[in-house]
Length: 431
Image (cartoon, rainbow, N blue to C red):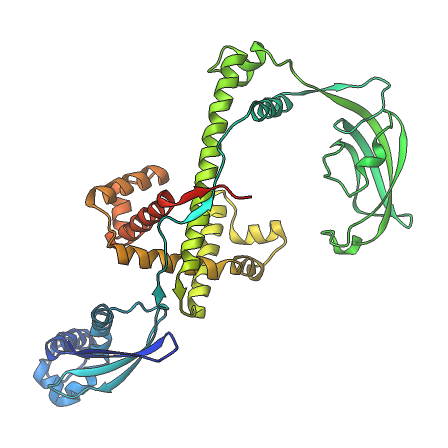
């Protein structure tokens, strides 16, 4: 097949000229005729049984050309794209140049392609050194967090509330003496210092005891979720029913066994906590090295202007993945928008941030895959299928049918390149 690609200078657009050979045209005409004859009523012939020669004489073979073109065009265009070694990013605009009888048909396609990428350095890049050291203080902080989780609330008898205490309160809020919706509650548990209430509310309860009445005066923030309350001054007539203090468990062997059935002593718990913290720090350090190395590889590359369609496609893909995650939790898109008070447009704008960076990163990684000739082995593809099947509780055959080898090869190859860039990075100390 004759194929010609002409790229417009300084743009990502071009014209792809290609031909459909007579043998393929004949296949398309056969498909078109077999489809159309089923609905034809020709005197002297049963419906659907008119011979091809009679049809051509009555209607002309040219009447089949458009349907024939529709039948063979997708494959012809795909083959032309492969032969010209271009990467379209949008649907083409197809024009017919000629459809002469007994000759190859000539077509052109206006195509937008990926921008060209000129790679810079991507191996042995210098990145900030990441510490994976776990100190005794880190271990103590984690143990104290675990103690906080196991803490019990104990009533404080005739003692004032302090930050960290929990108060059970009833309140009735008014603005200019008029109650407002959502401003009343009878038995509300509030941890002082948690900053879950309007700024200033919790501070005014510190120092007060159970059974005391307190008029809490606050001003709603200008960005408060209820627009009718934004910036308004309010008074909450508040009754303190109870004051409770946190009582932390003793840090001993009993505590260790309570929080982890796999240990018998506090020493064992400390060792296990240290190991988990070390693993977490190593993972976090690896991610930071990876992110910085990839970012530098992208910065070192020269990339042409990104077509708007690529940005939009990335945003929609991110949205679909995000809402798909919500769906797995039983939250539909409509429910998500209602719960968050946002719209589809808001979510679109949220993912627009960073879209260009994501697209550039993917272009650079794909260019490195091509430059290095990276590919996935059959063993790696089989392993990936098994992993995905286990992850989503699917049959391996179902995963195989849903994902082509090309898709799996692409994802595995990208991961290989990411690992190579990360593993070759040099960690250096910085001031």
